[in-house]
Image 1 (cartoon, rainbow, N blue to C red):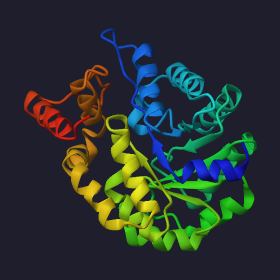
Image 2 (tube, one colour):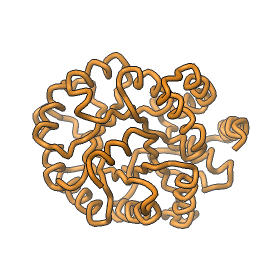
Image 3 (cartoon, rainbow, N blue to C red):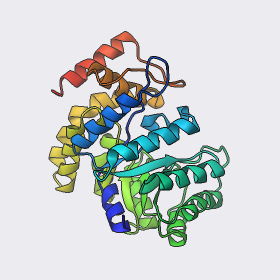
Image 4 (tube, rainbow, N blue to C red):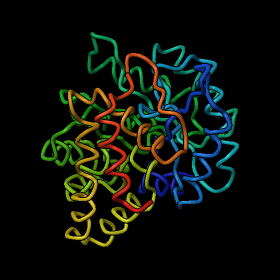
Amino acid sequence: MNHQRLRAALADVVAIPVTPFGADGAIDLSACRALLRRLLDGGVRTLTPGGNTGEFYALTSEERRTVTELTIEEAGERAAVLVGVGHDLPTAVATARHARAAGAQMVMVHQPVHPYVSQDGWVDYHRAIADAVPELGVVPYLRNAQLAGDRLAELGALCPNVIGVKYAVPDAARFAAFAREAGLDRFVWVAGLAELYAPAYFAGGATGFTSGLVNVAPEVSLNMLDSLRAGDYPSAMKVWEQIRPFEDLRAAQNSANNVTVVKEALASLGLCRRDVRPPSRVLEEPQRAEVAALVAGWGI
């Protein structure tokens, strides 16, 4: 897959699939396959195994490899696969190389979680990963509002395979400025805070957005994308109004229930168990009823 096709895959709804667990706490492989097929059948064309909605940091290395391989197998020729990588540098490089060997087209590099991150070190970290898999597209996941746009431009100059950015700083004005400092046309800009931020970020130059909600209602997310592509912001905002209560539940308490609400919605539809792993926790009964009522109102 060439860079132009990879860039097109990022300028889309970039789905972050959940990782369903069985009663024994292990990954429910059959539910995982069913949910992936539901996304693909619903029109999703870009999948990110190993994203935060997939509980990346709660999975073991072996589980992350399993989810990656399963996603690539289910995607086949129907979707591009953008594999989440991260942790220490050797682990990130090994995960990226596994993604390449398994048949992925791209990797998304999680924001480094080390408490001491210099801007030079940020460039070094991403360059090492990009250099290890020159055949793959590389997408930094940027949550650090302190990073200067010229440092991303530097990384792009050093690594031609860094083709896009998942931008997840909750500041639309900062995004618009950063994208122009780094190179508005050099990278594909993906709104990394999903549907609630997508209209504002598209106005600033984004052409794709990530989504966890898409696990529940693919048509809703794709409707927003269609409206944004057409420049029809009133229609996009109608979708925004529709999904805002659901997304507000996910964002509450510093996104404590981000994954939990999505899995609760899927459980209400009978698609997987509600189980999540610590430090996430399942919802209390009143919140479960609230989520079920919201989803029922979407007519899925």
